[in-house]
Image 1 (spheres, rainbow, N blue to C red):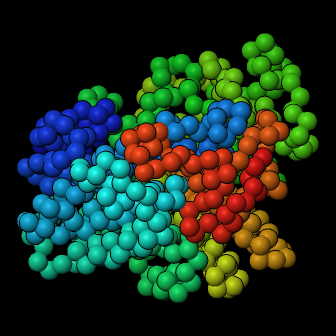
Image 2: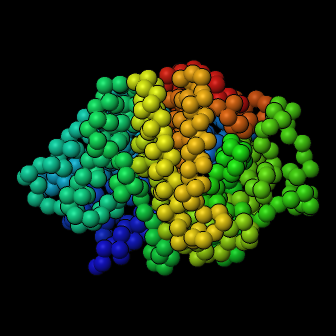
Image 3: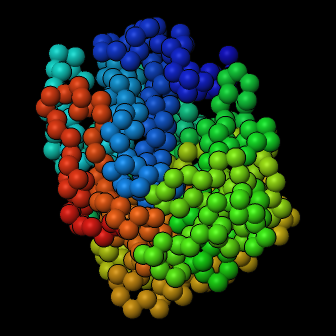
Length: 548
């Protein structure tokens, strides 16, 4: 069986929740108990796919809170319900943690330390993600089949256990007694040594993120000085979809939702995010034609019967320059915390990056199945540009080294543009909207001038955070972390207010999933006040800064 076919079959099984014999011989894959697999490589691939799905589901809700994606509802508590978080709970507890437990046993028994090291990195990433979004969670006894009511564990202790796991993973990956190598890795390719090196860099970059959250200066500096991070695009920790549309269909899910036989796209973009990228500088961000696709180029001749908000005024609590309804240059998305009004209408939706859709040539038109890159997109989990933005943040906030922060900021922007440009190169080449060296240079000069002219450390941090926010498209999870960790971007950066003047408390941590609380007598659901307290590393617990 070819490598690509195996990858597609694994992906198909996971996306459609099929219990494929290739993956598991246990018909009750999601039930408590040991999963017996003839080949641990298949189990490792299953964990890799599960982490991809966990990231995707987390990125969606986090992206709504960070206004990268638009949010449906009148209030935050209405928009995020306990049942809406069940997938995240299931991804972690029913799948990743249980599959890890079984793979750990097999790997130790057979001396498969590379399998074990990769799995430990993925488990540690899951643990850190859960703490970042929920705070305290059940962990120690969470998958014990005899304990039906595992108590919440302290989130700071779980973070440290995850960091310990990452250190163990590095030792496992370098274990000279290793007796086998995964038949297929769904994240990295190349020689065995290159794959091991990539996973080491991934582990270290996860550590960097965790220590930056905790403001651990010494640990952050040690990781930067070691120079074993995801600092080049070749090491990007991303899940790569394919353009295969037949059995199994392994295209990016957002492509599937929006590129549908000449029908209107399904997923609208966030007016808040669109407007920030449109208006932040004198010229439009060159990445916009890669990120987004405008089905219609709109103007003042719109039929108000078709476009329901065209003839409305913005709510009275909006400032004059706040985005509302139709934006400049024909960008048309949904407002923050609102009821969708754009179904069956031409909208602004996903473009070529990161879902593998179409490049926006400024001509409009309906999208069709097979357009663009035919869904050959990615899940951008940890990219080289993200690393350099985190380094810039650390140099400024932890080391007070303005010069080093500036250099890292410039490098981060370069990596972001290079990633997006190369991703859509086959579609954008020769276009007036193609990212070019001169456009990149012009953009960097504007940002660096702002950084130089910012009068305080806080103002310089605002510049770094906003640019990181723009580079994070497709990764709402890290945008959510960024906003809580730095406090930026904020209202002053034109984050759009909710349509309601009183949207309630913005979630600095998520409420618990319905299944976690309903099935566990040891856990009480969070109150409206509890959500104002983020994880242990949140520098501003109780803050209402984003309650707008």
